[in-house]
Length: 437
Image (tube, rainbow, N blue to C red; front, side, top):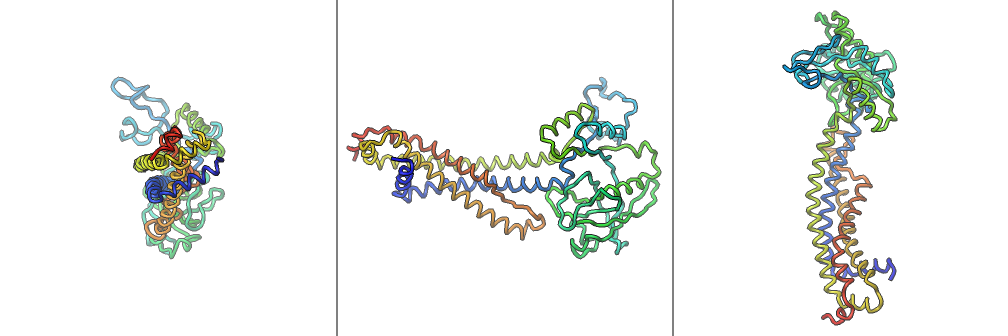
């Protein structure tokens, strides 16, 4: 008997007792549906967060700070850290790592970081704190806001327009969608191309204003910043004015610097780059490092939910064993006849194993398919309701590869569950089987 014939025979055997087979498949179906949904939620959120990494900055950038000595090498017996000549500090309120203020970075540090291989550009981490923002056509309606500095090529998720450009000297700004109504713009599209006024004060308290063109409106995201973003030209002008009146050494001290590395670096090369910077006395973090904890939490929750699905599949596995044991008992004479006609132990074993695999296949296929239908409904309803502000978020995502792995995994479990009944069937003596009543 060829494999295709075994497949047809196994399928016909399952159809003999439709009620029992259906109930066993339903048990597998429930486990497969649960497993698909839990993985779908994790995949959907991870995919969305991966796309939104650009809203936190250039994905090929490093945020670099100076290492701060704490109670370790260099600390004296009374807990104080040895003084390093020429080292500048920012802060000094004792709330930094190990109770220390943040070590400042200077132009010398920027030059040193630029010399590190695979670093494309380095930009000082300026901190501009504007007083307000206003629509140029409504200058008296002023609002407090946060302003971020763009680094390299920041892939902001835009609702309308485009991110700012650092390639020219024109002052540009993007605003979050939450700013649009307050600033008096009719819509996101209406805000693009309009002029806003940014007010900022210098060290003496004197206030000045700067005009900037709105190049785009940022889409609301789960992890994105609620700050507006200025291009290098605008941000530098604001910082220069804000630090007017400060000593040069205070102006040229930075808590962080941002370095852009080559886009084609592998994860291993990025890790090596961070190690090189660490050896030079710096701590470097990528955007992925920043959101890594979020991904870890999502993965942990997904694993816990998968555990509940696994319990359901375990119960279904016993259902497969029970179904096949009953089938073997009911078909004892048939097994004896097949052996008498020359079918070997291996073919008998394979026949019942195929029955188990078919149960796993149909249960998992229907479960994965049903989960996809649920996902489509939830995503459709969510996009018009509770997820309407998060454009592009598919709460449930079912990539082909993980779905295929779920089906194959359940088929493997079904095969293993069917090995005991299949072995029992293959070991039956043909004469005793033919005498069985």
